[in-house]
Length: 209
Ligand code: FE
Ligand code: FE
Image (tube, rainbow, N blue to C red):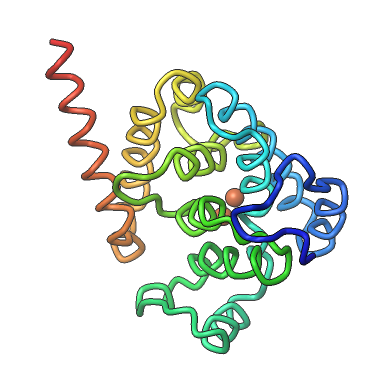
């Protein structure tokens, strides 16, 4: 895996078949199928928005690589590897799959590209002022073909290929509304991200009126 060197990594040479075979052993069938959906959707969004297609594909493929690790083990792995996490994350350990996923993408899959790693870190909560690749993976995770439960999916899917910031805003808005049903599950990063993209949305509305 040493051939995956840092940011000098040649993304056109990544062996996706090999990586997929490896991942399919780490994930349950449902999660693996979701992962393939996120991979292809990330690549498509990269095409639509002028991002690096292979990088998006790789970030999408690896975004949930830590998802199927049991929660207790997630906490232990974070502690053992000095990955900092909050009290809120300890109480909601599924959130750790993002941070831990970035660590595993680097240590087990040899991917050290900082853009890819940050897209994995922020794919669950989002954050204010996301990078292009962060937005792509965040959106792809929400709209990939197998997703069916979220409200407004048709409109959000269409928006994803037109306006990333507006699309992120719509997803965060629906996510915050959903999480507010159980306020103790609402994390501050998601709220901060929502506030940021809401402001952006209002600014654009003002400019267009
Ligand atoms: Fe995830
Ligand atoms: Fe996911």
